[in-house]
Length: 129
Length: 129
DNA sequence: TTAAAGCATACTAAATTAGTAGGATATCGG
DNA sequence: CCGATATCCTACTAATTTAGTATGCTTTAA
Ligand code: FES
Ligand code: FES
Image 1 (cartoon, each protein chain N blue to C red):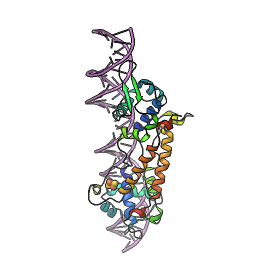
Image 2 (image 1 turned 120 degrees about the vertical axis):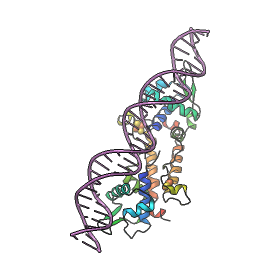
Image 3 (image 1 turned 180 degrees about the horizontal axis):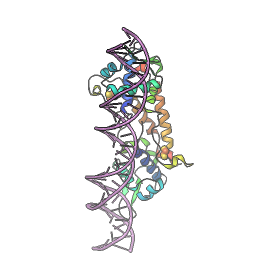
Image 4 (image 1 turned 90 degrees about the vertical axis):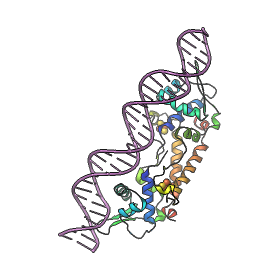
């Protein structure tokens, strides 16, 4: 069970932005500081923008900034923006779609809720120190 | 973020065994009941055996049985046996191995602990109904 | 002694994730 | 208005992981 490196990279970038909330910062600089491929980070920030977690400014002296205060953005927000809804099992059996419940479905439901709760409690501002 | 179908299949098989704890049951039967490839399940049960979660009997009328009472086997036990230790991020940055902490490491540590705790509280006996 | 079961290893196929390429579009500063 | 700078968009490729298969050996109860 793993989160993808999208989550790791995206979170690092967001924490990086959170460290100087008031300024905009361009991709190249973030990528360099966090050792991430520029082109890959470009796409991740794009996803984050579509989820209204960052704001972008084009043109000279452009870049990115958090759209909300770091205190109001959680790790869950970031992870969901990049990887989609938190659901720790893709259903493999036909039972899931049928009237019969599969015996383990309840486990993944409980766990998913738990994970989301945990990640919702951690805000970017908790990670800037 | 997903657990693999190993976890799903393995858990289903274990719950299946837990439903009639006293009997041994052969792979073919379990595979049929849970709609899993026989050969694939063979390997999963082998992993579970190496983790001392099931016991196997060779020869005619052989099969598998839980090695401990269903009340004493948790979902965490099964998942760890099949997928290895619960660690929701493989470290991607060099920072992780260095003296510098990466800003998000703490998140995955907290989360990993939380997941393991949640899964440890759910026993096979909770899933047999 | 033989058929029924598990055990072990190696291989292949499918799916997902990570990363790249190349250009289109917008905008600030002069 | 021009051009440099930076984001935006789509499609492709490479790498890795996961899922599943094939083949044959070993053990053991009947
Ligand atoms: S088949 Fe969907 S959770 Fe079991
Ligand atoms: S680099 Fe290992 S958790 Fe961030």
